[in-house]
Amino acid sequence: MKKLVYILTSYLLSVCGYSQDRPNILFIAIDDLRPELGCYGSDVAISPNLDKLAGEGLLFENAYCQQAICGPSRASLLTGIRPETSGVFHNYIKFRDINPSVVTLPQRFKENGYETVYCGKIFHHGDLDEDHSWSRYPAVDSLSSKGIEIPGGFALTANIELTKLQREKMFNRYGEAAKFGLASGPAYENADVPDNGYIDGYNTELAIATLKEMAAKNDKPFFLGLGFHKPHLNWTSPKKYWDLYDVRNIKVAAENQGPLSGAEMGLHASFELRTRYGIRNYGKLDQELTLNLKRAYLACVSYVDAQIGKIITELETMGLRKNTIIIVWSDHGYHLGDMGIWGKATNYEIATRVPLIIWTPNMPKESRGQKTDALVELVDIYPTLCDIAGIETPETVEGVSFKPLLENPKMKWKSAAFSQFPTPALREWGAYPLRPAMRETFFGPLIKSVEERIVGQQGDKWNREVFENTLMGYAMRTERFRFIVWKDRDRPEKQPIYLELYDHKIDPSESVNIAYKKPELVKELMVQFNKGWRGNLPKTK
Image (cartoon, rainbow, N blue to C red; front, side, top):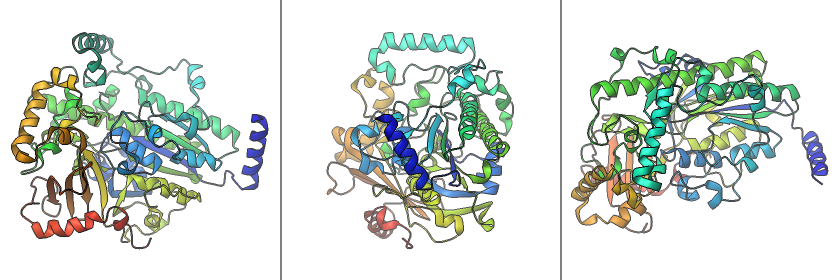
């Protein structure tokens, strides 16, 4: 029976015209990368390959994720459904458990005759969706036959042993609570190893080997997902990338405290970084450590950039570049001491703005190397790729194709982009509500101090059940403003608990909340906010 289905499917694909003439897709995901690239104006990041791609394609200056944490952001992008619709608000929800019939982006291409495969991190860990989204496995055997095996998290024996001891210590002390991120090794490492000595170099070689296998068959266009783990913690990269940077040229964040009058629940206590060995559980980090952490992050950026250069070079060598769409995106931004915190998981610009670059074979010459200021969202990637490839977009998708921007990067586009995040200050690093056990760990005093600040600001509005479980911050980014509305999701009819407003024309670092000084402007923005994403789509649609 399966053989008959295969024969019929192959016949239908042939008569429907699915051939290698259709564009291939190289779908590159980068974890935790804020727009810290040369092509985005960074004066320190060394990213020649991404800079070159931006110089040949189209760079989006104002691209935003829908939630600044790995699982929800990737679920939203890959299903085309926003967190508010899907219900995926933290890293421990599997999107298909609560949206069983959803058609993912790679699944849509698979259904339309594409060979779909991934190497590295595309979906969030534990949410691989292999039965639905992917048509084949990567060429692991090809690397194994050459003696190339999957590397571990650390390359140095001392750090491997240290991590093991740290895990034993944390599990002995905290039991089950330790498995939710408490048991971690050092925050960074820069061993003198080849690129495949760490996971992103290995996955790049795996992607190249897989690409060669698919090209040898040459019977279907491909959708190849290559997902880089860095610059996610731990910041591990080969020493040669660490050596690219002189710590004397690295600057610490200019804004090292939260916004004046900003929501106290809007910033967390850098939980993700503080679980790392050698990082203080409480208080500010010293200057030397701060600079080394940023250097380690930048080294990972350059490491990933080099891998992207390798896969693109391979496309060109194999003669596939001319018919391959290349799109590069990050799942969210990242605070590197900005606003006094480390990590993602906020509703602010630094956490929600992401790099996004696309190159297509048929882009107008006038658009190549251009930058667009148009507001776009990661949820728009799904319909865009379908649009370019001539594939019908499912009705469930809540984004809009930005293909017209490839024709005219300066055209008027969306009025606003939307993001959201539940109470960052009272959520664990995976955006999960605080488990009681967390208050018994070394984070107890930190959680208590954060909570006291919230109570002090909110007064009679304070309600533990609401603030820990159902309070959601909804962020709307317009051309000029960031407007954050804090509401109880269980009681949407009630007035917002708190408001934040930042004017990017005069305050691009979002240092002062002016919501309560500009009531008329807030009223105007609230009308726009209440129209939702549908009410802020391009007028051409």
